[in-house]
Image 1 (cartoon, rainbow, N blue to C red):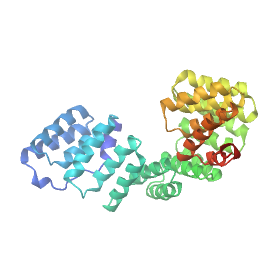
Image 2 (image 1 turned 90 degrees about the vertical axis):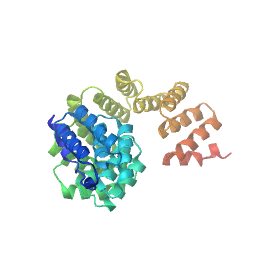
Image 3 (image 1 turned 90 degrees about the horizontal axis):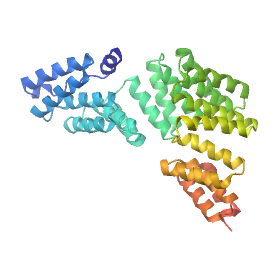
Image 4 (image 1 turned 180 degrees about the vertical axis):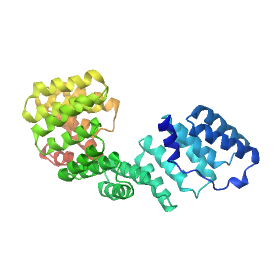
Length: 344
């Protein structure tokens, strides 16, 4: 309950325009706020709905409804209510922030960034706003922008572990692995119980070919990981073995991850890469097609299928796959598109 209370205390309450509402709707709104702060979100939601039935322009109620739905992971509902709040109040920065958070939760990072910038134009200045904006920009591969905004968040509050994780991810995206490592280590210092920090550090060490250090972090993180979190460490350990050239051991680790979640596309991509290295090209094509059926936005699936198709002498299919991967942002696919294979 304490987490629920803190969640809502972090969001500023709008007072703009309340004098235009009826006395009874304001009274119900106050009661709903009390229920929300007490962690009784279902009861609060009912009361907020009563408010907007009486006063359809009560933007504060819609904003609170959006916060509740976001806390329940009902992201589409959260966005719907946030936009209704915005329709009735276009000058309150916390509404723009809420729209941005809702879009972020729906993985629409372009829209999320757009609304956070609008929020800042209207005065948003919370560390948490710059934090979510930086996360959105990392997901858009706008790493320089992400670094700028996460540094602002850290200037405002340097005690939040996740802020340094986002900073590390931005540096990792820029291939600055030393600074990424430093940021992850700072995050770990602030919160040594986060298994994902060990996976981030292991990823840096693998990129730097510090395999012993990578394995240490993999093992430490695996001890803390629970449920689906274990998938990340099986994948990391598989890549550790792949770097050692121990393909059978790598395959075993990837299969362990597959057993936990057979629809995890990161697992399937790693399995396809091992199949290619072992010369199992037909199986690799099938695996990559399976990934594309699950999530057609994974450029690695098209790239790997292109490699497998090339090895099977399916030149047209290979070039088509690489072109698709390139359109999705795969820089390594460009080399293959421009190769003699695709230009004979």
